[in-house]
View 1 (cartoon, one colour):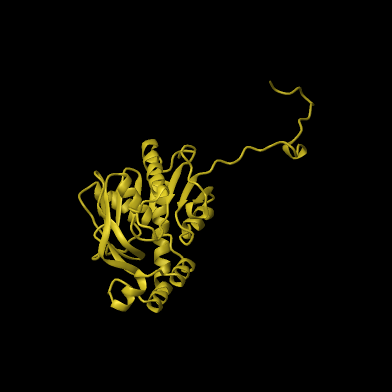
View 2 (cartoon, helix red, strand yellow):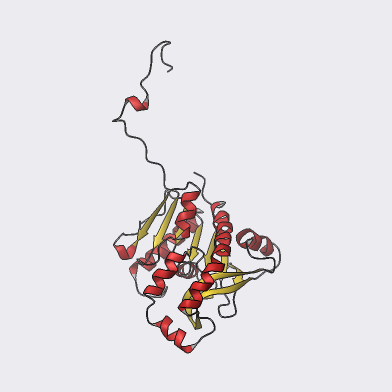
Length: 270
């Protein structure tokens, strides 16, 4: 009922004890390990005014039981293997399948992409050689509508269909899930990115920042130093990696903007 003419209604500012409804959270971000945070993904979400919540299982933050209430799901990387016997990894896969059932788009980074492959029926295994550092990938264009899908997700690749992206992985999704479309590859890792439904799984770290690289080089584990000593061509020594960061980071951020925007177009309506 409309108020009587001439009767002033109190404003929200005049009622300081009135609770305001919390703003819904757009994106759930699953973080597995302490050292592998959202990086540029968080910066991009903030810059575009999106709300997001990160849960880090290694910090003791339990993943939610349900994806209900979120518009999108992002799954980060980490030093763990997708096949490791860890309850949180299986819970992440359950949330990925929940998201798929509800039409909520998922984007996976490195370990996150591997978990997506497993969740949808693919297979993850150790590669013959690791990839660590700034390395090239190339687009894999199939028949239409695959070419349109490739352009939508990875339109930020160069005119030659190539890009230099940041890698740090020893495993990969060696068998794609049924119905997945391969979008990008590299000589050492045939499956670099795949699309399935509204989702994108990546083997590379499009969320990378120089700060993350410095943190990882400060605590690189045991496999990376051994690979450097072996002189593997797919593994950059620390000095070469830092030098490559200076001229590769800008292109990575540009490609990240294209990928995250394509993911954003698929979010559930608010």
